Length: 301
Image (cartoon, rainbow, N blue to C red; front, side, top):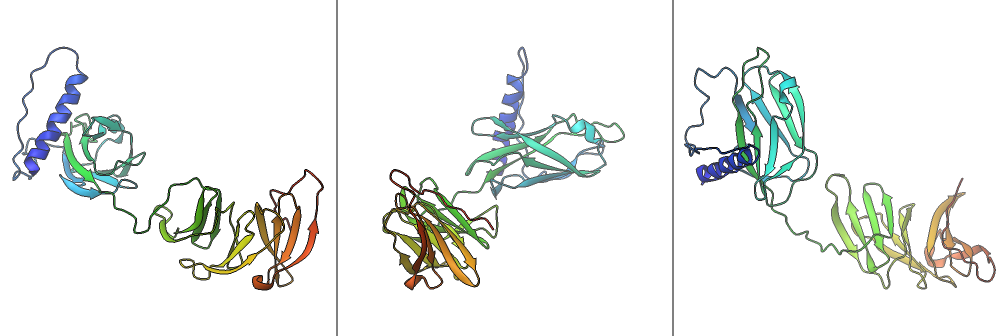
């Protein structure tokens, strides 16, 4: 199997060379002996002694993967230009790469964008590379396949985000087009994971976080207040009712007490004392007049 995959890769690279060469060409492809993995003969003065990933490697990550090539002698870095190619084999598409010189004999190759899941790629280093002594280096190639996608253990529901609040290493996400709140662990920014998903009676308008809580405006259904001391398991503390349709909130603290500024649509602006959200009280309000409503609120100072 390994020899067959290598033959397919060599055929793919030969096809690319034919397409870029004017005129006819007679090519002979020799199947590589799977057991012949030793270094080139004594006539080769410069060659790749190690190339990662190894041939036919599987499960390569689609984002953040770096590939390394180590030569047997120091190389002239200026000769690397246009000599490193990463090709998606199923459709022969070249993938842009960045090449970094790690040390005089080693280069690191990274794709500038994410690779595709469940795909095969070929990595080739051309024969234009030279050693610091000016000797031509032998070309080298390898192929690998990327990781297969796996289903998230909790269903991720596709919907546009209308609100995002961050508390510590967790992100709380709301969508005005879907009832519910989703919680993501962002301790690994490159791979956030969904840790909780809870339903709400209506679609949240937005979401705000503060003082160990999240505040979720629900339009005519008031403001839903959750305890997030355990971010993976938000607990409903109370529902703060308002006379209008809530579109935005802003939590803040004064003199050890917790307050909530509420944009209550046509009913104007309200300030609630939510130190104990179960017995919240309105301490101030402002009605802007007919035809004028409060849709957004923010605090300063």
